[in-house]
Length: 223
Image 1 (tube, rainbow, N blue to C red):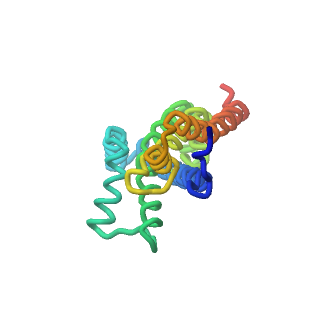
Image 2 (spheres, one colour):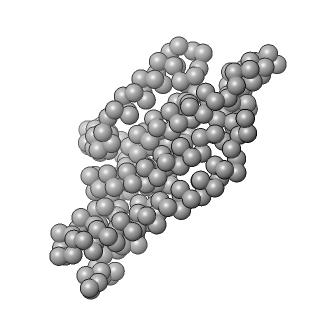
C-alpha cells in the first residue's frame, strides 16, 4: 500500500524540516516585530499609534498569499532585494520567512495588546511616578505581565503560523505542501498522501500546543 512512499525519490523528512525551519524563524521574527508593534499601539506618541494601528489593520485584512507573492514578485524580481541569499532557493526561503513574519506579527501584536490591557493602570502610573520612562515602564513592568497572560493566545498564533507555512509553496519553497503537491501529481494515492502529510503537521503543531498550554498554566498571573 505504501510502495509509493519512496524516500529516495521523495525527501519527506527534508520537506518537513524546511517547514519546521520556516515556522521557527518566522515565529522568532514575528514575536519581536509583534512586540514592537504592540508597544507602538499603546505609545503616548500619536504618530507611532497611527502607524501601529494602520499596519495591523492593513496586514490582518490582506491575504497571506498576496503578501508572500509580493515578497517574491515585488521585493525580489522588481526591486532586486534578495535578503542576502546566494541561490534562488535560499532567497525564496528568506523571502517566505519575511512574508510570514510580517503577517503573523500583526496577530502577535493584537494578542499582546490584549495582555497589556489586563495589567492594572495603577502599576504603570506608579512606575512613571518613580521616574521611569515609557520604554522602561513597558519593558520592566507591563510586558513581563502581558506575556504571562497571553501565552495561550500566542500558542494559537504560532500553531496557525506552522500551518500557514504551506503558502510558501506559492513561491517555490521546497516545504511539505510543495512536496505533497508533487507526490499527488505523480502517484495515484491522494487520500494516503493527504493523510501522511496531515499526520506530519499534527506532529509539528500538537507538541507546541501542549507545551505552551502547560507553560500558560505555570506562569499565569494570579489576580
